[in-house]
Length: 147
Image 1 (cartoon, rainbow, N blue to C red):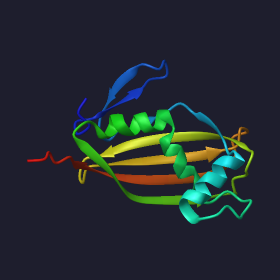
Image 2 (spheres, rainbow, N blue to C red; image 1 turned 90 degrees about the vertical axis):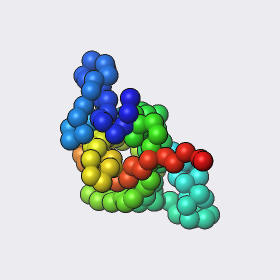
Image 3 (cartoon, rainbow, N blue to C red; image 1 turned 120 degrees about the vertical axis):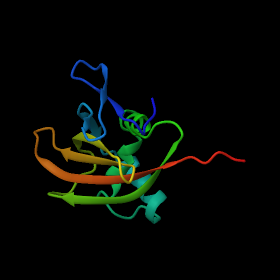
Image 4 (cartoon, rainbow, N blue to C red; image 1 turned 180 degrees about the vertical axis):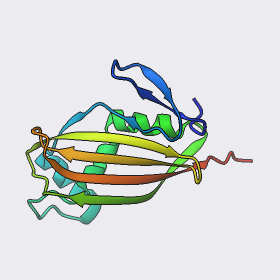
């Protein structure tokens, strides 16, 4: 499907359905866990040696690579287009903890002009207490074919 015209989403029964550019697409909730080795790996990749016991504020951005989220991004962008990271925002109500389980909520919305995709994520405890809200803006540009 061409990402410029719209994108797909799943209805409550898990079937693919068409969605217009201005309608948000919500994924089913995703259970995530912050493992110590994942935090250490993230720190090494982004800021050098692992020296701290707290979860970096930007750690949840790694969940954009989860299969369900990555597939949503790919479906939303479409073939022949390139997603370019434009901006991100993190708002915390409370710190995330190593070894803790969380529920990740993900919503995506296409914007027609300029072409883009806004991903909003919420991170909550299993009891439903919101810990953080994140927003990532992806600009969508056409892929140039070599001459």
